[in-house]
Image (tube, rainbow, N blue to C red; front, side, top):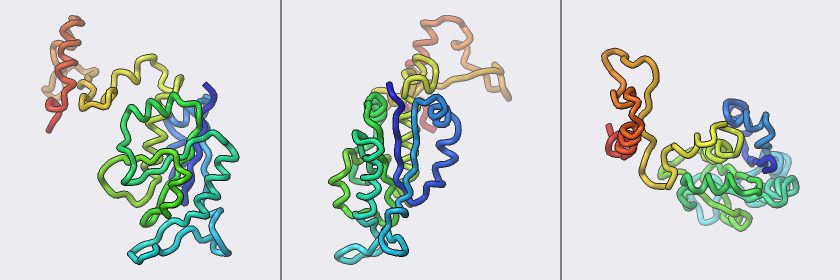
Length: 223
């Protein structure tokens, strides 16, 4: 598979430097598995002040991102990668799940991610958006964090990033259900009178698999 091109449209490109430049995301870039580009929306603002936002029609508090700067930024991104799909984090979007991350990771098309700000965006920009997604029922100050979540969840699934052939299979939420990954332990066997479950030290693989299955239910880990 060719390098996954990921372009991010944002007013705060500096927010991504630490995230994209470390750990597995950096590894994916260094190996040519993923390619990141940051597009500063301010560069496509209108007038001498490069305005990107304005008050909403009908009244209301806050400002909305204007459609013209957003579309110009999308067109620039499309010129770099014509087949790329456009993603928009929004409360009205589909709840983002592991199955969505898996699907995007297998697609050949690149990604263009819009990061909304202020009170949102002119709704007309959604005509140029391929997928609207929501990461949960809470409010953030902008779309940068949802964009980072989208990137991290997809890039780690690209072949060659994590290394182990099954490392992404034995994880929580693999079937979009409520099952979670079983508890895991490493040395020392006992720490401050807290011991590793004996079954994990038994060498009995059938018993270990049974224990792991029983401890992959949400109720086991509720505090």
